[in-house]
Image (tube, rainbow, N blue to C red):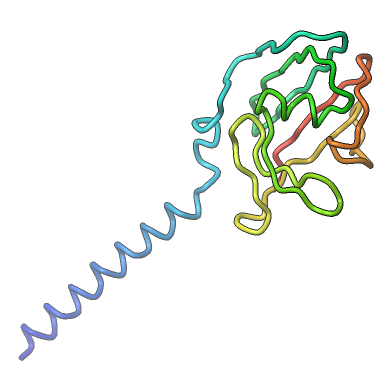
Length: 142
């Protein structure tokens, strides 16, 4: 009987450890986020009269996109080249992916913060007119 109890406890312990390891692996969702990036080096896209430069910052790495476009807003220019993805809402696009990297507040408490000239933007990317002199930045925040 003692042997059965010890075997059962060992099995429960082993399953508990396996469950803990699995849970820890899922919590480490930030690990390797750059692996899902579409671009890991600076890139240039399109042709058009306007130029917009956007830096994407995640952890201690960044990549800069230079987009030449005839679109009116930063969001339209980035959507044109599939550099951002998101859901439409009554307030504009809720950006969930930048450069293929997901940040979804409802899933992992992360989001893409949008900055203009170093200041947190008061407008969304899809409502921000392109200003070739401005510096735009998306920063992964958690």
